Image 1 (tube, rainbow, N blue to C red):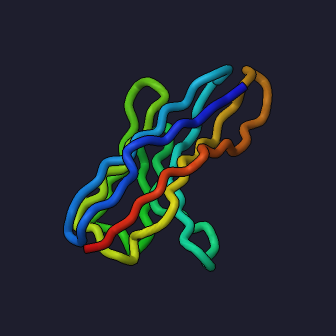
Image 2 (image 1 turned 120 degrees about the vertical axis):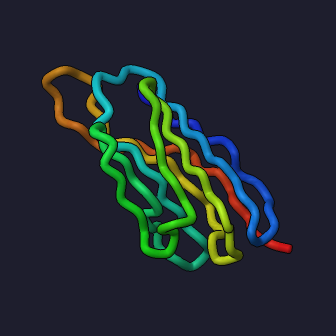
Length: 120
């Protein structure tokens, strides 16, 4: 069984910073990519940032230059969020594209989400 656990959300003033963390655990053979998505009320879930096994990154236009995604040699990914704006307010979800067995296909797994609120 695979689990993704996010942490680091909270309330921050506009212009502030937060760092989200996501730890993957369980029966994992290989993680191909990890990413962060967000969803605010009335809107669809959208990709914020993603990073591949080879450390290639991809960002939504709205966060380029402000957010940085990284991952370590373990099964963790991080999202450093700077210069936060009220429109960044959302529930942020960790995502991982991974396989659980040597010969099996990969599939998406999701964390439970962490709330980020940017407000004065």
